[in-house]
Image 1 (cartoon, rainbow, N blue to C red):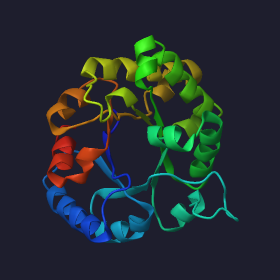
Image 2 (cartoon, one colour):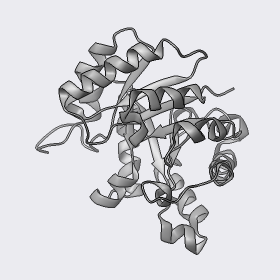
Image 3 (spheres, rainbow, N blue to C red):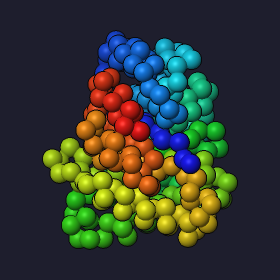
Image 4 (cartoon, rainbow, N blue to C red):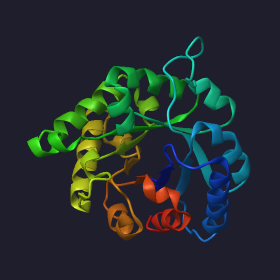
Length: 251
């Protein structure tokens, strides 16, 4: 049985003091959590090391929000997977819808980033998902399968088992539109079926697929009860300690 993972994506939010205060609240509240669900805080680059140190031996882990496709060199402002590894950070988000939209990251580039992350013993949280216009055209399954194939299908079976996938219905993030638990399950099942066709069902059943479409305390339990939904990539709700912990309890 796959372990549930709840990853909070803080995006570009919080000052250092605010980040420390939120982390302190989460450490305190995490003691209430029963079960083996994993918790990951994907914080802005300047806070990675201080958050890791503050968490100490807490059950909460830390993740980065992106990494460069380059190892090192004259790339001002970039952060390599090697740098992230060197400070002991285990997770990195790759291909988030905002990176695809605002920074024009495509499947070919993300395939390189996935390789860099895995090559440095990082667990990629690889994001895929469709915008509203694609959903309305009914071609969302085609697009998501293309995103997965372009960035992950060059990997061996052993390597792909080290990847966490996060499905983001971009049309349901901050738009007022809501994806139903059945819509989430349907797309997660599409992705798992695609993985099974490529790598076999044994491998596909080991890969966690998280849901990243406006997860909130009031819909978490229903979402996480779906057979192919293995947790969540949480945005806005991860910036409030009680909301994030309530979502974890839903797992």
